[in-house]
Length: 116
Image (cartoon, rainbow, N blue to C red; front, side):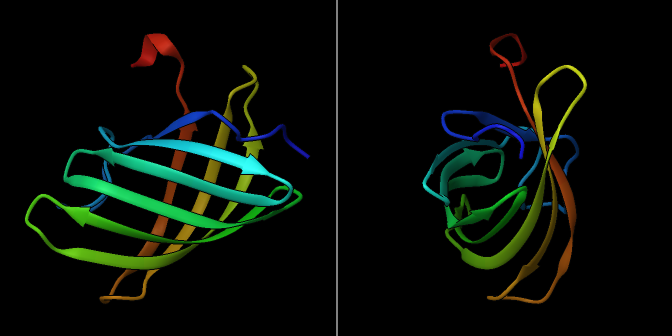
């Protein structure tokens, strides 16, 4: 199993559709005893939260977010935790909105302080 996500900051490697999570979004993860949660913001997202579970290298969570235009949305995501050759962690994600239509895949990777 890859190391804990606790205290790590991750960011998408590419922008999603306009008005969604993008490369300027930062996720700050916490993890304890198989429970994961994160706060996120940046880009079009004013504030977002996710909460779920981790079993081995698999995450299963729900997310909810508020955008700058005042709309809210929520969905479900399943992710695989991958350790990169340089020791950083990556999440390969498959997500689906529950409050609207749409689904897809995304990749978020741990950023370092110099990445900002």
